Image (cartoon, rainbow, N blue to C red):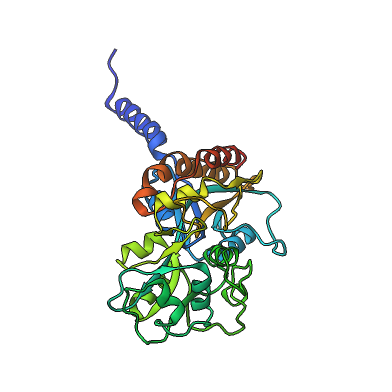
Length: 339
């Protein structure tokens, strides 16, 4: 039986319309996220590599990440510290560990490529107790270094920063006086008017150190190494001067207790031979009762991809530490609750 030309055209149009609503035409979800600037390199890398949905990540700092997730501005947040007890938090959310790593003590002093520091001396440099680079206490730790008789230019994070909070906890746990468990530098360092200059995120902070002679600060090793800046070796409780590295941070973080809510209960003074104690973990803040089911599913899929695939393969390349086996198991348990 012959078919008319018009009938054939109609059939072709029908086939084409079916093809257009096939898998390739299904709209992607757009997920807006942000927070930790410490983890910006790894989370941005994972977001760009992820093809299932569109993920945008803003490096605004942990405090802003928590606030924007709470307000609903972000579909999920990222923070290097849990919500402070006094802060407003969402009713239905979970922490999901994503990645760990070292906090590098970065410096810019002409002619000085290596530096040994203790937490006590470092704390004194950061809060103004030691004012010049050739102070006797710094020189004793670096007898062969030619340290200048020049002011120590401190650069610190502005706003509420999870990296600041972890750094302050490392200092106070290892002999530095005057430091508190807080993400705001003025409070964390007990300075109503902190010495030095501030930067809004890790990337701007590292750029500031690069541009400022005789400066010192703290940031993720990923951004520091990318700029080619030197960083200090810190003395651990075993008496070893240890440079920040994936291996040394993993050795330290892998000995810490995993709490039921996924937070790593870090004992910053724990004696771990070969460990770098100035380290942290970044957590996603994810909904467990999203008002948009499709977004909830998309968030779960992306975070699972980060935990199972992207972080294990990309973290070491970017100077982050993949999750330990125990922390990864907890992360997968918690991400299953995301919806």
